[in-house]
Image (tube, rainbow, N blue to C red):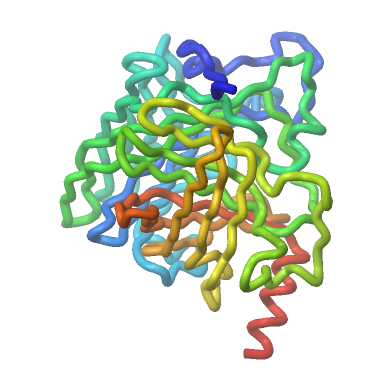
Length: 345
């Protein structure tokens, strides 16, 4: 079954209720990232719009290495919870804190730029698509339950070639990497406490002939088993991933199973620092990937959950290397599991 795609014009939609009765928790989002692996440096770029309230949140987080236990440990951060609705043109969005997203060719090319208001930090990036706009399922558990199907919620993600420049204080860097971008529209994403084990998002691009992504839980039967195994129970008859796909030589394939095993977690931040992903696609091919974190940061999110972004070095079965984000989120019960382990180490 071919992976579904979204039309290019979905890049530009940022709809408002216009008198309709929308859930107050309705959101639209845009995520971008980039990395400089040789510097163990990674970027998290986010726009989260709340159309019912006419507000947005987001900004830029730049982090380096593995010692970023708090958001303020980052190399640079300007992430704001409350800003006015983005300034909009026919093909661009600009936030109050200096982030501009311009779709020069919707579905295919986007320019992302940033100018820090308080510090000498800026970047200018051109991202060019190397896959279609692939339909993305829900990321946070509960979105599929809470979103109104009649409102036509949606999501997409796309692997990109990203080039440009970054100024970080007195240092200037060239950017040339293969990140993923994603977005949501008309999703209902509650900030209420939830009760499930950590969820991980594992995009990776080895080249035009091999790209992979999935979002889901660790395998309870993994070796070693998850540290949460005695604290959570997953449905016995359900898959471990919400959605996933692999692109092989331009062919987009659905995943039929994913077994993700975390081998090691950061002793303080708690995010996975080493893991293995074994996935089987719809034509019966098994894909195996080994990953290790080069950078990691605890970044801003809702007070009721934890959000970890990482720069990962992935290796495939023949030794090729990909660098991409790995993102993980969890709620209070798992945080208490981590807290107990820290207390007894």
